[in-house]
Picture (cartoon, rainbow, N blue to C red):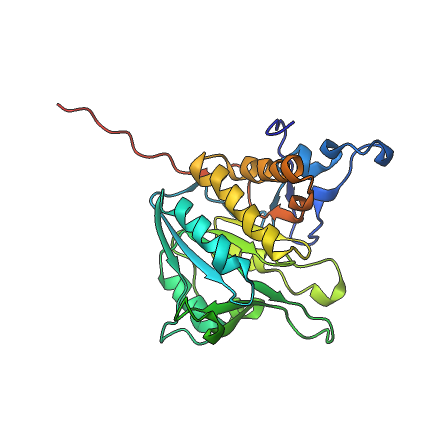
Amino acid sequence: MIGATRLAPLFKSDLLLFPWEVLYEGDYRDGKPESFWGLRYPVARHLIPSKLYAMELALPTDMLFCLNHRLPYAPQQERPAIEILARKTGKFSLLRTLTHISSGETFLEHLYQARHNVLHFACHCRPCKKYEDDIDALLISLVEDETNLAQCKEIELETYNFDDIDGFFQAEPLVFLNACQSGGGLDELRKTFNLPARFIEHGAGAVIATVCEVPDSFAALFSKVFYEFFLDQKMMIGDALHKTRWYFLTEYNNPLGLAYGLYSPAYYRLAQPPMMEGAA
């Protein structure tokens, strides 16, 4: 069943962030993994139905890796493994301490001015559990010394930062929000937290986010396997995400890959290298 994709359901709505991947089609007593939509199809979403989405991630790639130093697997495993894969197709850089970045707003300004076409976030999401008018945040560390991560300064990227700062991403980036419940939630307290939509509104070509809490160790390995399929094997993003889910189910009997959703068309893929012309 791995990789045996036939249909690619595409849901066009900005109103309901339903986790279609966990929809079970059939008799629950049968216990068939392929009955989960996320294991049967490369499910995708259009949060902005009128938007014309990018079809390709341009070469060479230019990845900016943003981590939270409180997650041990992010700097120790996720960062080095993904750097190796990213450098095969282009550049890789770690978000470090920069004099002009001091908040979510200045960080967003930096992203609009840069030309990164892959933005990877291995971060914490701060949940809003007490006050309805509080807004959740993506917690990001500014790394100055990788040998002393405890001294990192933390900034928060929130949905309202996108309203306060005008601008667009220049290179239609792939955005991987590898953080707990980064896709928002169905409860009332999280109804304003929709980072995938904010990134897409401001020019992202594709977004991957989660619908629930994900252990740091799983998140680190999941993203590595995804990039192996997407960057190394050049699969379409929907197929790469679908095959990554199957990888963890077959190798570890772990269905948690169903927590990862695609918030853009399933056909987005790495551009093909230009053909070399023969000598005259």
